[in-house]
Amino acid sequence: MSFDSAFEKTVGLEGGYGCDPDDKGNWTGGAIGSGELRGTKYGISAAAFPYEDIKNLTLDRAKMLYQINYWNLLNLDEVPSDPIQEEIFDTGVNMGPGASAMIVQRSINFLEIGKPLLVDGAIGPVTLGYIKKWCGKDPEALFKVLNGFQFIRYSEMADSGIMEKYSRGWMQRIQNYKTGKPVVIVEKTWFEKIFGK
Image (cartoon, rainbow, N blue to C red):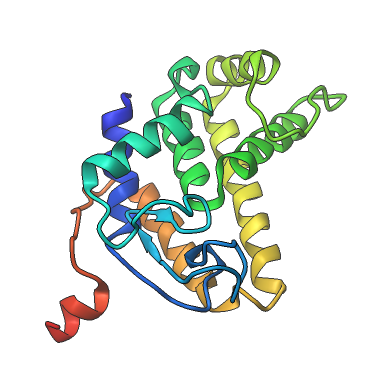
Protein backbone atom coordinates (compact mmCIF):
# COMPACT_ATOMS: atom_id res chain seq x y z
CA MET A 1 0.00 0.00 0.00
CA SER A 2 1.18 3.43 -0.71
CA PHE A 3 0.22 6.75 0.73
CA ASP A 4 -1.34 7.67 -2.63
CA SER A 5 -3.75 4.74 -2.54
CA ALA A 6 -4.77 5.31 1.08
CA PHE A 7 -5.22 9.02 0.36
CA GLU A 8 -7.55 8.35 -2.57
CA LYS A 9 -9.75 6.06 -0.49
CA THR A 10 -9.94 8.36 2.51
CA VAL A 11 -10.37 11.65 0.68
CA GLY A 12 -13.20 10.09 -1.30
CA LEU A 13 -14.96 9.34 1.99
CA GLU A 14 -14.37 12.83 3.31
CA GLY A 15 -15.77 14.64 0.28
CA GLY A 16 -15.88 18.31 -0.58
CA TYR A 17 -16.49 21.48 1.36
CA GLY A 18 -18.91 21.54 4.29
CA CYS A 19 -19.51 24.15 6.96
CA ASP A 20 -21.93 22.74 9.54
CA PRO A 21 -21.94 25.04 12.60
CA ASP A 22 -22.86 22.05 14.83
CA ASP A 23 -19.56 20.29 14.01
CA LYS A 24 -16.79 21.41 16.34
CA GLY A 25 -14.23 20.49 13.68
CA ASN A 26 -15.52 23.31 11.49
CA TRP A 27 -14.53 25.95 14.04
CA THR A 28 -10.94 27.28 14.24
CA GLY A 29 -11.08 27.05 18.04
CA GLY A 30 -12.04 23.35 17.97
CA ALA A 31 -15.31 23.91 19.85
CA ILE A 32 -18.73 25.03 18.69
CA GLY A 33 -18.78 28.83 18.67
CA SER A 34 -15.02 29.10 19.34
CA GLY A 35 -13.06 31.04 16.75
CA GLU A 36 -14.20 31.34 13.14
CA LEU A 37 -16.54 28.97 11.35
CA ARG A 38 -14.42 27.94 8.35
CA GLY A 39 -15.60 24.39 7.70
CA THR A 40 -13.96 21.23 6.42
CA LYS A 41 -12.87 20.21 2.95
CA TYR A 42 -11.42 16.83 1.94
CA GLY A 43 -11.35 16.02 5.66
CA ILE A 44 -9.07 18.97 6.42
CA SER A 45 -10.84 20.77 9.25
CA ALA A 46 -10.61 24.32 10.52
CA ALA A 47 -10.05 22.94 14.03
CA ALA A 48 -6.97 20.94 12.99
CA PHE A 49 -5.70 23.55 10.54
CA PRO A 50 -6.96 26.94 11.78
CA TYR A 51 -4.70 28.95 9.46
CA GLU A 52 -5.66 27.14 6.25
CA ASP A 53 -8.08 28.70 3.78
CA ILE A 54 -10.43 25.71 4.00
CA LYS A 55 -13.00 26.85 1.45
CA ASN A 56 -10.34 27.33 -1.25
CA LEU A 57 -8.19 24.35 -0.27
CA THR A 58 -6.90 22.45 -3.29
CA LEU A 59 -6.75 18.69 -3.48
CA ASP A 60 -2.95 18.86 -3.87
CA ARG A 61 -2.61 20.96 -0.71
CA ALA A 62 -4.91 18.57 1.16
CA LYS A 63 -2.78 15.64 0.01
CA MET A 64 0.39 17.31 1.30
CA LEU A 65 -1.25 18.04 4.67
CA TYR A 66 -2.45 14.43 4.91
CA GLN A 67 0.99 13.03 4.22
CA ILE A 68 2.83 15.24 6.68
CA ASN A 69 0.29 15.43 9.50
CA TYR A 70 -1.28 11.97 9.35
CA TRP A 71 0.63 9.38 7.30
CA ASN A 72 4.14 10.41 8.38
CA LEU A 73 3.12 11.30 11.94
CA LEU A 74 1.59 7.83 12.37
CA ASN A 75 4.70 6.17 10.85
CA LEU A 76 2.55 4.25 8.39
CA ASP A 77 5.38 3.48 5.96
CA GLU A 78 6.61 1.12 8.69
CA VAL A 79 3.33 -0.84 8.90
CA PRO A 80 3.61 -4.03 6.79
CA SER A 81 -0.12 -4.64 6.15
CA ASP A 82 -2.11 -2.63 3.61
CA PRO A 83 -5.48 -2.98 5.40
CA ILE A 84 -3.93 -2.03 8.75
CA GLN A 85 -2.20 0.99 7.18
CA GLU A 86 -5.47 2.11 5.62
CA GLU A 87 -7.42 1.60 8.84
CA ILE A 88 -4.98 3.55 11.02
CA PHE A 89 -4.73 6.34 8.43
CA ASP A 90 -8.48 6.68 7.87
CA THR A 91 -9.16 6.66 11.61
CA GLY A 92 -6.46 9.31 12.05
CA VAL A 93 -8.04 11.54 9.45
CA ASN A 94 -11.54 11.06 10.87
CA MET A 95 -10.72 11.28 14.59
CA GLY A 96 -7.26 12.83 14.70
CA PRO A 97 -3.84 11.14 14.69
CA GLY A 98 -3.59 11.04 18.48
CA ALA A 99 -6.96 9.31 18.79
CA SER A 100 -5.99 6.86 16.05
CA ALA A 101 -2.73 6.04 17.82
CA MET A 102 -4.59 5.50 21.11
CA ILE A 103 -7.01 3.14 19.37
CA VAL A 104 -4.01 1.20 18.03
CA GLN A 105 -2.45 1.02 21.49
CA ARG A 106 -5.69 -0.01 23.18
CA SER A 107 -6.14 -2.68 20.49
CA ILE A 108 -2.66 -4.09 21.06
CA ASN A 109 -3.25 -4.09 24.80
CA PHE A 110 -6.50 -5.98 24.23
CA LEU A 111 -4.71 -8.62 22.15
CA GLU A 112 -1.60 -8.94 24.33
CA ILE A 113 -1.47 -10.43 27.80
CA GLY A 114 -0.23 -7.90 30.33
CA LYS A 115 -1.15 -4.71 28.45
CA PRO A 116 2.42 -3.87 27.37
CA LEU A 117 1.76 -0.46 25.81
CA LEU A 118 1.37 2.92 27.40
CA VAL A 119 -1.64 4.54 25.74
CA ASP A 120 0.02 7.86 24.96
CA GLY A 121 -1.34 8.65 21.49
CA ALA A 122 1.99 8.34 19.68
CA ILE A 123 3.09 5.50 17.41
CA GLY A 124 6.75 5.09 18.22
CA PRO A 125 9.16 2.14 17.98
CA VAL A 126 7.53 0.04 20.71
CA THR A 127 4.00 0.42 19.34
CA LEU A 128 5.32 -0.22 15.81
CA GLY A 129 6.98 -3.40 17.03
CA TYR A 130 3.64 -4.73 18.29
CA ILE A 131 1.82 -3.64 15.13
CA LYS A 132 4.38 -5.56 13.06
CA LYS A 133 4.03 -8.57 15.36
CA TRP A 134 0.24 -8.66 14.92
CA CYS A 135 0.44 -7.95 11.17
CA GLY A 136 2.52 -11.13 10.95
CA LYS A 137 0.66 -13.17 13.56
CA ASP A 138 -3.02 -12.37 12.89
CA PRO A 139 -3.73 -9.17 10.93
CA GLU A 140 -7.45 -9.96 10.75
CA ALA A 141 -7.70 -10.02 14.54
CA LEU A 142 -5.86 -6.70 14.77
CA PHE A 143 -8.12 -5.19 12.09
CA LYS A 144 -11.29 -6.31 13.89
CA VAL A 145 -10.11 -5.04 17.25
CA LEU A 146 -9.14 -1.68 15.69
CA ASN A 147 -12.67 -1.41 14.30
CA GLY A 148 -14.12 -2.38 17.66
CA PHE A 149 -12.30 0.39 19.50
CA GLN A 150 -13.18 2.82 16.70
CA PHE A 151 -16.84 1.92 17.22
CA ILE A 152 -16.50 2.43 20.98
CA ARG A 153 -15.04 5.89 20.37
CA TYR A 154 -17.91 6.79 18.01
CA SER A 155 -20.41 5.50 20.56
CA GLU A 156 -18.88 7.63 23.32
CA MET A 157 -19.01 10.69 21.07
CA ALA A 158 -22.65 10.02 20.16
CA ASP A 159 -23.58 9.40 23.81
CA SER A 160 -22.29 12.86 24.71
CA GLY A 161 -25.23 14.24 22.73
CA ILE A 162 -23.17 16.87 20.95
CA MET A 163 -22.18 14.70 17.99
CA GLU A 164 -25.13 12.28 18.04
CA LYS A 165 -26.50 13.45 14.69
CA TYR A 166 -23.35 12.17 12.96
CA SER A 167 -23.46 8.63 14.38
CA ARG A 168 -25.33 7.04 11.48
CA GLY A 169 -22.91 8.59 9.02
CA TRP A 170 -19.95 7.23 10.98
CA MET A 171 -21.38 3.73 10.81
CA GLN A 172 -22.02 4.08 7.08
CA ARG A 173 -18.47 5.31 6.68
CA ILE A 174 -17.11 2.18 8.38
CA GLN A 175 -19.37 -0.09 6.34
CA ASN A 176 -18.59 1.61 3.00
CA TYR A 177 -14.89 1.75 3.73
CA LYS A 178 -14.76 -1.96 4.44
CA THR A 179 -16.51 -2.99 1.20
CA GLY A 180 -13.48 -2.18 -0.93
CA LYS A 181 -15.70 -0.47 -3.50
CA PRO A 182 -13.98 2.29 -5.46
CA VAL A 183 -14.65 5.75 -4.11
CA VAL A 184 -15.15 8.71 -6.41
CA ILE A 185 -13.70 12.05 -5.35
CA VAL A 186 -16.54 14.56 -5.46
CA GLU A 187 -15.94 18.28 -5.63
CA LYS A 188 -19.57 19.19 -4.81
CA THR A 189 -21.32 18.92 -1.45
CA TRP A 190 -24.18 16.48 -1.04
CA PHE A 191 -26.57 19.43 -1.13
CA GLU A 192 -25.19 20.63 -4.47
CA LYS A 193 -25.41 17.13 -5.90
CA ILE A 194 -29.07 16.75 -4.93
CA PHE A 195 -30.33 20.25 -5.60
CA GLY A 196 -27.80 21.39 -8.21
CA LYS A 197 -26.92 24.60 -6.39
